[in-house]
Length: 566
Image (cartoon, rainbow, N blue to C red; front, side, top):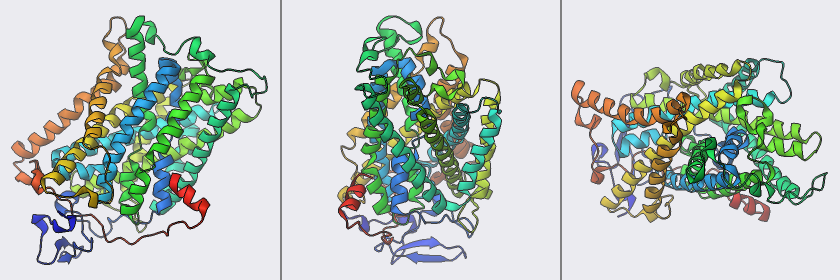
């Protein structure tokens, strides 16, 4: 069955779909032309002064997908990963997590390209599962991004300490936070353009470091020393985590790296949020999703491979609790190579990634809260936007949570606090990824139940539904074993337990609480709490199939090559 033959029964009119306009009158939108509004029962009536601007170009979405999520996780967080897992542990950890991320991204890409809804995966969860699930996913996703910003701000203080150990970290936290918020007040076009250049800097930096790492490993440094694989031999490919002997110690170290690597990948799903503000998401989102493998293989797997060759897992400088920028494996490598001035250049490039990631944190958390407000799951004031389509009240909430970064202002605590926030963000992010996969599986089986041909969709995820089942199973395993060491005798750590396992318990509790509240306490209509049957899922409202193409295809050979990869 063709998608154009499907219409949501609750909104169907004689010639199309009914939509409530801002004047309060019903207007008919033509489904055949793809001009279909999102269902008002999910997203809520979008009133005047609550609209987001659709001003992101294809290159903005592509670069946000490729480099927007590259933050301090890959530059700074890899220090803990190498220290806990060793060179083989970090390589396996990032590679396996990369397969999980790819599985999540292609699944999310299929839904986002077909339905570029405000709020991204938050609105998708309400439509394809049920509204209590949408509430649960929305607030945990919001919580995830609200915590990510203080993590990046704490990291910026660590990085700046490379040059300045005298100024309080609070000063640099405030400066970085101000820059991130200022970028977001410029609207989606300014954010997209800024992220385009930030992402370009990050990508060039990583490529340069990978090439430099290969040269240094082969003996091309000032000393002429051939490093080769000596750190794989001594101290060895895997680490006995926390001194636990045997296979158990190596196993737990490897799973700890999996959680650490998740933090580096968190943010890959920003493309679903950006889709609502893209000019032509049915073209730009599939194009961005198809290039996810470039970021995973080149920017992550190749980077950690080089790190494992250049830096010993036993190097004491990898300890982030020292709170200095020297903890970055990349900075350690270039310092040991004896190349003057290069450590400062590398650190400056890494610092831009912290600014970029903090800006992305503000953008994503504010759009998530905006989507929750449109659904009626947050105070309506957070749905308000200014004339540039900026949800100012929602950004204000992000600013309040950013103040948590000042916890790291104490002497030597910036790196430690960064680790706490990174751990919590990783767990929350994995829970949200699992939720995205559940949403996709409902989307997939719903399309099957309605006889829809997925080949007609804007993008069709490969190897489904098997890829989604694989990723969902792996996420469950990682969440269970990531900090299992706290349950071993003599290894209890309260901070690790709270940041790793408390969210796992609270996530289902949130869902059950909202479900009981809606169904039994407030006794709301069935549509507010019941799961929609697969045969009744709405694949049309909000599809935006009639959007005009915003950018012509490149005609030069160079342009075609760049377009293929970037």
